[in-house]
Image (cartoon, rainbow, N blue to C red):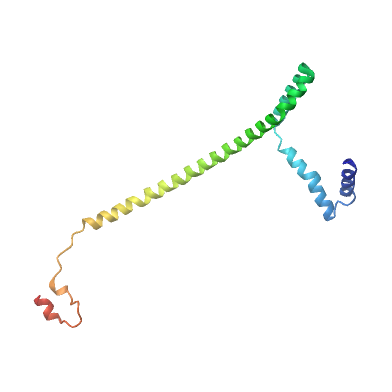
Length: 154
């Protein structure tokens, strides 16, 4: 039932490879599955073969009870595999976040190391400066009505 439409789609790809529909079907039915298969690693194959071998041994040793036991283990096993993969991705993301934060903290430390000595040096110079006594001739009246002679008398 599924093979008939699948063969028709493959015939469309072969009959009209240069059309937009042919390119879309080629991308959907050839390139995407090829990219997914390229991501399969040796670890994936090893895990699948180990699970298949365990299932075959269980079915061979326990016969009908093994089938029932295998059927009850399947959802838990699948969820365990998915949880393991998710935890691996979470560990990778957390490691990247830790590395990024370490780089940021190092940059902040270098920036503070460059800025703070200059800031303390400028602050120290300001505090160590002595103010000289201002001479009465350099003072000016605060009010425009006052003349300079009154200012000098005060």
